Length: 87
Image 1 (cartoon, rainbow, N blue to C red):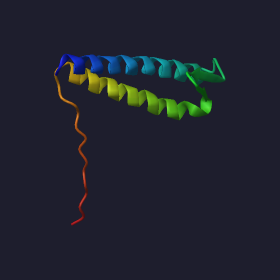
Image 2: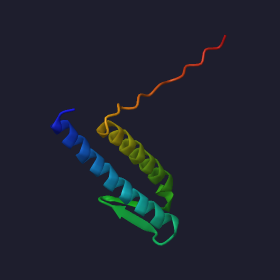
Image 3: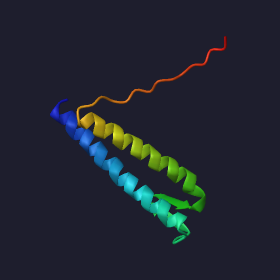
Image 4: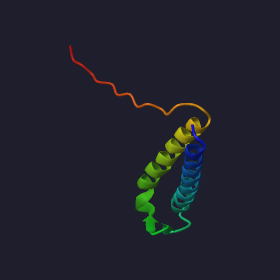
C-alpha cells in the first residue's frame, strides 16, 4: 500500500468514526426522549427515524472494521452469496 493510499484510508476512517459518533449521539438523544428532534448537518431527525439511524450506525461500524482491517495489513472482506438449488 502506498503512502497516499494509506493517508486516504486513514482520512476515510476518521470520517466514518466521526459520523458514527454523531449518529450514536442522535440515536441516544432520541431514544431517551431528551429531545423531540435532532439535527446532524442539514438533516433533521425525529423518533420515527430511529430505524434509519440504526442502519446508519451499522453501516459506519462495518466500514470502520473494513478500513481498520485494510490499514492493519489484512485484506478487504469479500461478500459471498449462497444460492439454494432445489433437487
